[in-house]
Structure formats: C-alpha cells, structure tokens
Picture 1 (cartoon, one colour):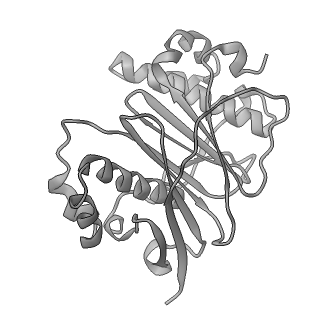
Picture 2: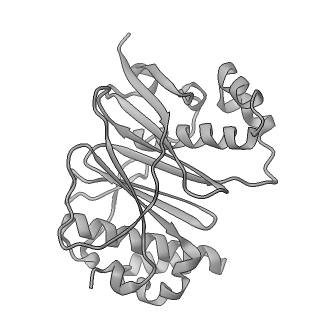
Amino acid sequence: MQTAKLFISNSNLKQIEFIPKKEYSLNSNDVIIYTIYLPSFINLKSDLTNFLNSKERNRAERFHKELDKNRFIIYRSVLKLVLAAYTKLDVQEIDFDYHSNKKPYLASHPWLHFNISHSEDYAIIAVSRKKVGIDVEFMSEDFNFNEMLPDIFNDNEILSIQNVANKKNAFYNLWTRKEAFVKALGKGIDEDFKYIPCLDGQHIIDTTLLKTTENWKVFSLNIEDQYRAAVAMECLPKITPNIVLFTLPNTINTLIGN
C-alpha cells in the first residue's frame, strides 16, 4: 500500500494589515492568506461590480437575497483583484476555468493555486504555487453537531471533542481541517470524509483512498472569536511553509494599489 504523510497543527499566526506593493511574487513555499470582513466592503459594491464580467454579473442577479448577491459580488471581485496582482493581468482578463469537480483555476496561469471560503461575515482567500485549500466557518450557537459526529469523525476524533470543556470550538477546529484538506485535494464531502485525519500530529494516509501521492500540512488559523479556519497545502515533511495572514483594506484605491 502506497502512503503519504499528513502533518496537522495549530498556528499562532496574527493578522497583518495588508500594504499594497507594485511587485507581487510567490516563492515555492509561500502560502498567502487574505481575510475579508464582508460588511466593511458593502460601500464598495458598485465599484467592485465593475470588475465582474457579464457572466458573473448575471450570476449575481440570480441570487434572490440581497445579502447573498452582495457577498458574491464582494468576494468574487476581491478574488479577481488578488489573482490579477500575482499574474500581472488586468482584472478584466481574469476568467475562471473549472475542473470536472467544479474547482476554479486559471488556464493561463496553471502554476497559481488558489482557494476561497466564506461563512456569514467573513471570506478568506489562499494563494500558493502548491495545491492549497482553505475553509472558514462561523461557530453557530444554535447548531447541534452531536448527531452528525459519527458520520464525519472516527472514534478517537469524537472522543477528543467530547473530552474537552469547549466542545463547539473543538468540533469546528476539526471540521475546518477536514474541509480545507478535501478542498485542496479537489474532493467533495463524500464517504471518504470520515477517514481524513484531523487530530494534531503526523498521520499516514492511504493514497488509494484519497487519490493523492503528495505530502500535506494542515494548520488551524485564528481569525475571529466566533470563527474557525484552517488551511491545507501540499508540503514536504521537512519544509516549513511560509504562511502570511493579511487583512485586506476596505478602500478601493488601496485595493487596486493606487
């Protein structure tokens, strides 16, 4: 049986205020993460809409709820601005292609890997030269997760949740790790989800199960008190990835680097 290694840990990264620069570059071990607090971007909606193509604008109009429409406009536009900075393309030239699993990519720049996640008031973007996945979740007070534990966690993982005082935090911590990893792999939530490791430490994974021969690392991130996030990246065991966590500004001139 062929195996690969998966290392999982918490990260003590602090968010840094983003300062635009003329040259954007990615080294082989860089993972750059941008957080977006969506309510602070509402006033930019009309400006950000200008960065969407006709297909994206039509998609935005199909949302029945104004809140969902605003979220789509904001996080899709900001994603395009971020990718334009790294590809040196004009924002209007950023056009997404999709793999068979519906994961977006840039056919013009296959070396640039990216992923986006959003939940309630936060969106989070990760870019890297290696395969990457990211997940953020709002920790709802009303969500009863106990009934679903046996469907998504193994016995040791369930015990790790049940044996701590703050079970909600523990649940979302492990859930986001699994989500980030399957997004990096390009998988959906399927019958294999339960067998994806999510506890701290190094794990051996069956490559026939997860269809990956690469080694991976997953880190939990601190975003805000009511949110949990995790990032997964392709990474050799001996390599320490350079993860930078930026808070994006909410002025249009700063976003476009003027």
